[in-house]
Length: 177
Image 1 (cartoon, rainbow, N blue to C red):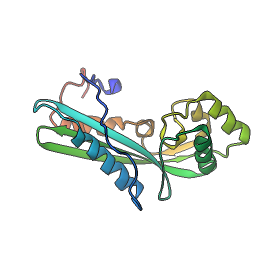
Image 2 (image 1 turned 120 degrees about the vertical axis):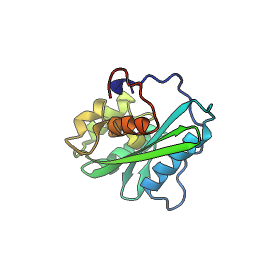
Image 3 (image 1 turned 45 degrees about the vertical axis):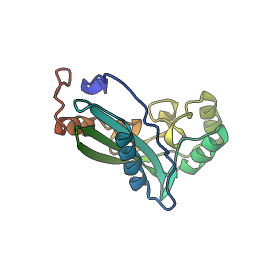
Image 4 (image 1 turned 90 degrees about the horizontal axis):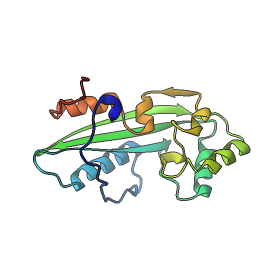
């Protein structure tokens, strides 16, 4: 957010269940979770609330945040040599109104050797990352091609975030617009 000149006055986690529903498509999942987050956070009438969620999808399969090194390895083996989608949804709540946007990017991961995977797992960079990797960390060496928004793959689509904040009436972008 600092890259677009926004400094939040507070960061609060939304306590919601992020479990995908049975047969829920990845885009629908990402939109639903984001909307549930923005609705779950109590706010004063003069507070603007921004929430988002990112999902990694291979076909209709949603790859969440791996719970173990073993699950992260399974994800990396599935992503190896393939294209997958990274879907990020954002929502802004201000007073009684909600604005929503989503961005879908396509990422290709190179074929990973066993030593590539083990070396990455040893960094622990996979922890807390949708799909078990972060494009802005050591896994950047695994990504030869993307189509879409790099910042959305990282987790917050900056152009869309600035636009949605402006639509909600936010104007203080630290000298940027």
